[in-house]
Image (cartoon, rainbow, N blue to C red; front, top):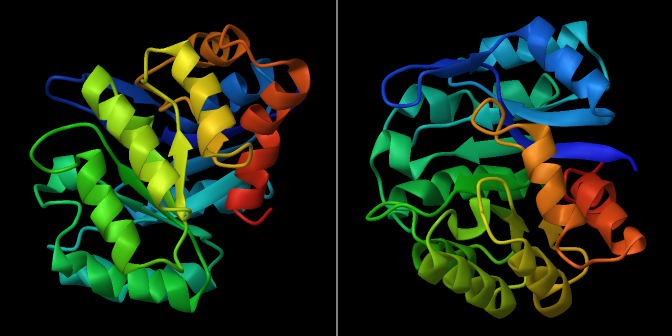
Length: 237
């Protein structure tokens, strides 16, 4: 199997999480588990850029943008020109609603460069699947990855599937989502090309996330699409 990690972080997150991973550990993890490329983010985009330069072809740079910090919005195009190929949004971390109008300029810039947007999901009141559905409805030309596909709540997971079936520009990433059967359901009812593997490193371990796909009931051909092909297409690799 070939693997692309569709969602990971570099650095340390304190507070309740108290987890972190450094560059050496990340690359060692990728090598150990045959992860060819990782879609990576850090609130300090310079850290991600530094890794992109030191590990060419292995890091998919995701520009971390906070719509409440105009400097990060203004810097988007600069990072696009430096090789970043996606946008990362975290409504939960920065305390804004995922369907807020303040996101429109960000998605408009992403559309201008034909780049996808990855957005955290699964935590009220900021990042519910229904809100991401409304965002996708307003920006039908932007590919939107719903990170965690609803996360740990069964009702939100169900909503993620419903929103993705309704809006063809929504793609699902499955890290942190505990139900393997929902990976198969997404593959069969949302689309063979719209569900992808991710680890949410350092919050989850690759072996845990891989097992969810392996035990989902998908055959090897379908697993390869989830593990590699769909992310390659989503990120334009």
